[in-house]
Image (cartoon, rainbow, N blue to C red; front, side):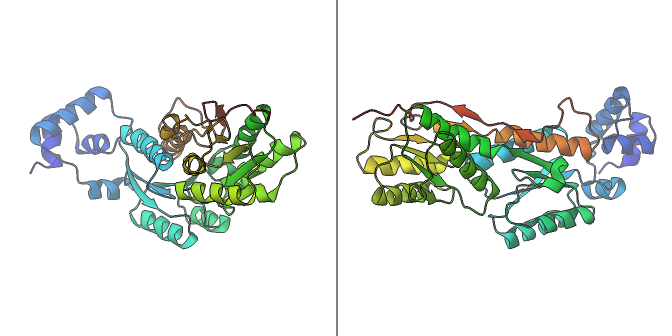
Length: 336
């Protein structure tokens, strides 16, 4: 097996220069990098990742904690982060926390044990104090989809309240006043904010919030079905239904059809997230765009800029704005 000494001799450069090229030191000229890479290729030299890590105090790996590994939403987040970091020569170690504090802590400790240079955390259940303790112990973190006021410069979030407001306002503008709502789990920050936006739009229109028209779901398709069935059973007068994510909206659409309702002629349904399948449902789902892929890219950019000192042309944006996507599942209220 070729050695770094043989690479140095073949490229006609010093050992230190070969080491700098291997570790991605920006001070090496492109011409010298080409000579070293050519020598490495010709000799079949493979850098020792562990030795690199020890020498540079960098593992060139980034930890990523997500709530779940399934679904379009988390798939888009993971894909965008992995793609951007891989293009920069970094690797991503992914684990899930399942929205439980103890599991999130275990997942974070696992990432730390892998010597990740930084952690991108979609952490929903661990406390603010725990996250701050990571920083106190020199663990570099960037939070995605969670806003902590004292860590604003390390948070990348969506204006979820605006998103909830836009969804409900769209239904109101189509003449609907009896509007039901299926929320996400109330302990989650984004679910709280989307519900607050819903209430804001109702209040602005002079419509009283009716708790009997609100069901707490869990962001899964089955809870959209359960939510619709529960709401319809106790109060079947609503003409529009707002769901806090697209998965629950798709479940609600199935349940509504099972009750013989036509969408949107008898019931309008609006989702949230604008995941890929939303445009392929029948009818196509009106929803609120949640640019999670762009937020993931922004988190990766933050890591490249702040941890690896990589110059990026993209300024860091900490607050993303949602956008209403009008499709076929929202219709005007038909007068009897």
